[in-house]
Image (cartoon, rainbow, N blue to C red):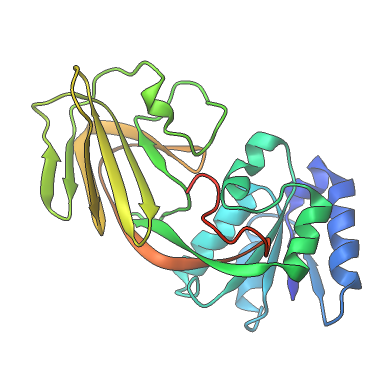
Length: 255
């Protein structure tokens, strides 16, 4: 087991980091602790892990950096990943939505006694990885739930977008929309287009979703991205192997 402690976690809540370290290192088996000096150090650590199970002690940013690097190296699907979230609620909302306890003691015990669950992720044509749902446009202010379909309840300027699901056009730029939501579920991407005017949502399930238009922004995993003129998201079924509590083996919250 390779325990990777993110530098932000040490500054944010040193006591939670200490608890995680003590619980994990007291368990039977070999445990190596690596305290990162900065985000760039993660690349070197992953290159030397020699197939060991990874335990990330940190916030959502640390989790996402690890997932992106593993994906970039072609190792995401073969890597066992666990996490002890450390940070205020909004900074660990993604981990919580994936089913990871946010209490340091409970999360550390989950690392030792939990079960591995395969979760679908979205990858994009810019090398990004999305663990939860994403929304277009990015909201002007953060909402309480990182994985909610927040664009339904916040006023949006109209968007002129072309949305395609596996090449099939769901809406084109001649029909302004209020928002678009995409998430991975059950091996496919679920895309929902909310019309600007009164009318039913347009939805589809597909392997890939392409959105294009005159400069749009989006929020993915509580991070604003863009503006961009085009982006394609593709589902990788079961690509994330994450340790979650053994009880309640149903779908994680927000998925």
